Image 1 (cartoon, helix red, strand yellow):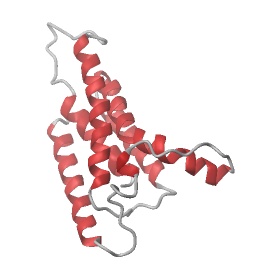
Image 2 (cartoon, rainbow, N blue to C red; image 1 turned 180 degrees about the vertical axis):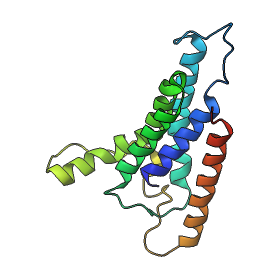
Image 3 (cartoon, rainbow, N blue to C red; image 1 turned 60 degrees about the vertical axis):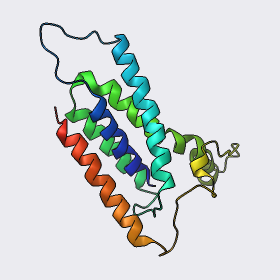
Image 4 (cartoon, one colour; image 1 turned 90 degrees about the vertical axis):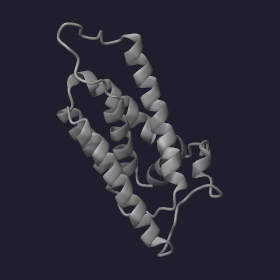
Amino acid sequence: MNVTFHTLAGLAIAAALCPKQESAAQPQKPFAAATALRLIAGCIAGVLSHGVLDLIPHTYPIKSTIDPFLSLILFSVAILLAKKQCWMLIFACFLGSILPDIVDHAPAILNHRLGWSLPVIGFFPWHWPVYSGSVYGSARTSVSIAMHLTLIALCLRLILRRKN
């Protein structure tokens, strides 16, 4: 699945995990244990959501040349719109949601584009051909479109529900 969709899922996870508005009487310390647990849970949930999304049959509706830039724009807009107390959580969820692609695909992309010879390993099983839901050509396009639209709707619902 395009990294933009993984980013959207990561932002939805951050919205779900971000604490509700705190009262002025008892503000939470920036690095309290609850904050650390949220950061770890957000990063792990991002990685796991990546796996689930990659297992679902999908095509790649966004061109690979603009996909990373759209992802970064989406992340940047989220940071700009979020309260400062949620920035670290947003970053942790974003990082977790794109980490599998960085680990498994970035070396091959850098090798191809820059002529490098970095080792390419497929660490995450959902990127292995036997488990991947990647669909190329026109096969199962309607299923892929339905999955992408469902993902967008679910993520936007989570994000807008917690718009503070």
